[in-house]
Structure formats: structure tokens, C-alpha cells
Length: 356
Image (cartoon, rainbow, N blue to C red; front, side, top):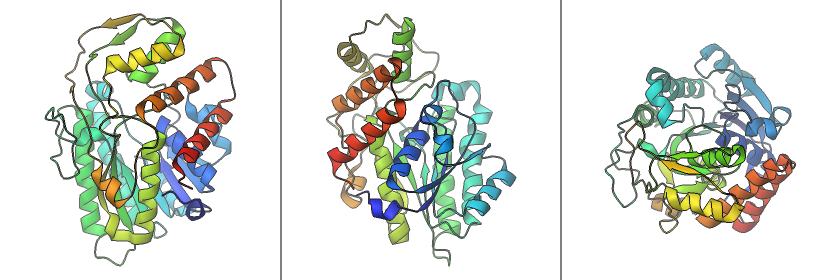
């Protein structure tokens, strides 16, 4: 369970706080009473959730590249974080084909720089390194991948994240295991997160709403693709639970952890698009064409380990996830106060889960 008393006053450093998941995590931790410092490049999209939530005024900010070791180390030295969440990444499969060197540099070497900063900062007690569900060697299984399954990836993004997983394990075994340093590190692999405030290119939910608002044709590649869709607040809650357990119980909770939706909560791309159309009274013009790059059709996660050992379970089913996402984007189009809307959704999520 997420414990508000635990998080109150904790010094938490988040990399990638200007991105979609990072902004939601920052707002979530702010409501829990944590003291937050963010390290990231400028917001990657316009509009951006980071700016809509005015997070610049709510937390410490260092707008820099995590590969800038001098600035990164200075932030760790000055802020002295107790807990670290590493989310900064090049997160798009399509973009990884166009910029493979940058993708590997950010996702692998960037992670290395964070691990080094953690290693040399004695205030750090626990760290959750966020990778992806796509770090598994996808064999088009219809069942979910477990944490001990083979890592891999045919595209630069997936393989860069698999490489980061190997790096994280190496550092854990080399520097943070059976040593005097009282520090615990884990990696977290979540599914395809959705929710309000994502404006990235080449992602289904942002593409739907951008096409809807701009009266443009929605370009889709595979109507039958199945992904582990889940609301962003669900895996973020898993990360918070994991970070607390690492902080308090140390080595017992290190390793890799999956945070995915219930097996029964699956829809393919076509069903997602249809649901949003039916529940937003909007008409979409759709064009389906083969994508430029090879993509997997089936991808599911087995979260039994998180269910049994962390007592983490998804709070919102897929219909609720989609309803809350639609609510957010329509409120944005109507010019409503998005800080209020976002905070209300966090409060509704917490009330549904009884996690505080």
C-alpha cells in the first residue's frame, strides 16, 4: 500500500519529470507531501503536461541532459535525495529507428550516469529504474511475460531497454549487494500507459485526440495489435510501493518487477478507437496502412510477483482508464483548469483504491 505518512517530507529525485509519466508522478508525490527535485530536458511536446500543471513552481527543477555528468552529479550533491525514480528516456519505438545512436546513448548510457550518481551519493537509500514491457524477447506469446523470461528486442528502443536491464543488474550485483552501502535498487517494467496529458507522436491515445481535435485522418498501422493498456496512475502506484519496500526492507525487494493490467482487461487497437468514439460523441476518419517498421501483435505482462509480494493490483479497469482519459482530454479542449482536473483524478484514484 502507498503510505502518505512514509512519503511526507521524503527527498525524492525524478529524472524525466517533464515527460508524461514523470509529470503525473511529480503531481502524485506532491500530493503525498514529498520534497521533489526533477532532472530532465525541456518538455518534449507542446502542449505539455508539465507546463499545464505548472510543476515548475511546485518543485525543484534542473533542466539538463542526464548525460551531462557534471550537472547531474551537482544536482545529486546539492539535493541529497533519499529516493530516486529514473524515468528519463527516448521512449518511442518509431523514433528509435530514425535515431538509433541517440536512443542507445540516452537509454543505456543515461542510465549508467544515473547509477554512477547514485553510487556516489550516500543519502540515497532506494531507487526504482523504469524500463519497459518491451524489454522482453517477444515471441508473440498469448500469455504474459514474467520477470525471469528472456530479455531482447528486435528494434533499437526495445534492445536499448533490455541492455539497460542488464546494466542495472550488473550495478546491483557489483556495487549495491553485500556492501556497506545501505541502498536497494530495482527495475520496473510497465505496460502501455494511458491517461490525460500525453501528446507524444506515434502513440495511439495522443494520435486519436490530436486527430479528433484537428479534424484530421487518424493513421493506424494494426487494428488487431494487443497491448497491456493501463492508466498511468496504476504503475506509478506500483513504483511508489516498490520504492518504499526497497527503502525499508532493502535487498529483499531488489530485482525486476512487472506492473501490468489484469489479463481480462485487454482490447486491441480497433476496440480502443471504437470505445473512445462511442464515449466522446466524436467522429473520426481512419486510415489503416502497414507501418514502416516491424511491430509485435501480442504483448502481455504477468504481474503475479507484484501481486503476491507487493500486494499491488490495478485499481481501474480498462473501461475506467479510457473514461478518465477521455474526461481529461475533453476538459482540456473546453479550456478547464487542468491542475484541478488532474488533482481530482488522482484523488478519485486514491479513493477507489483506499491506498492512503
